[in-house]
Amino acid sequence: MRRKWIFYVGFFTLLVVGFYFTLAKIIPGYADRKFQFLNYVQPFAFTNQNGEQVTQQDVVGKVYVAEYFFTTCPSICPMMNNNMKKIYEEYKDEPDFLILSHTCDPENDNPGRLRQYSDSLNVNTKKWVFLTGRKDSLYNTARVSYLLDDPKNNAQNINEQFLHTQFFALVDKNGNVRKKIYDGLKKEEIQELKKDIAVLLREPSQKRFVNNVFSK
Image (cartoon, rainbow, N blue to C red; front, side, top):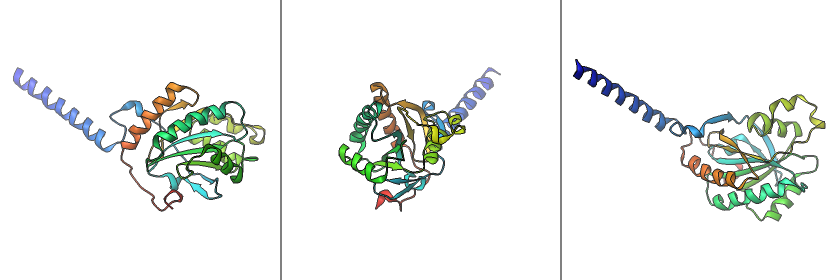
């Protein structure tokens, strides 16, 4: 009886372990639960610094960091983008990585101004993309997709709002916001973000859209 009991315990232990490793193999991020799925990025369409349209289809298969800033910001934005440039320098040669910087001041930040701003940073805009568009679409994406602000704020008059946030979102190859929202002003969170990008880059992509603006 004791032997039979030991056999059943061993059998079910192996079954559970095998099931776990199967899930870890087929579901990205399952084995490391700290890389939880926070949200899914909804469809979007914005205009980059060159006047080209960028949609969610263009970033499928890419790991990317999303942020909001504005070009005339005198306070937190220069510090945020100084930290973002450290991330850019780390991964600028990685083909499956991007940065998407959305303006929160589209009335002033047109493509031409975004291009001047990107030139001042001396970055490759195929890797670090600057986006503008309709204010309501930009703010809705920040709140509902990237979780960079309270979605309840969308209920207020959009014309009386100004979105000013220091936070970054990390998105995996399949359009999922992962793990946490990072504080773009904290050195330790920037270091954490760098390491987390490397983890997501190793994950497989479930689908790939190759004929896009970043592959031209």
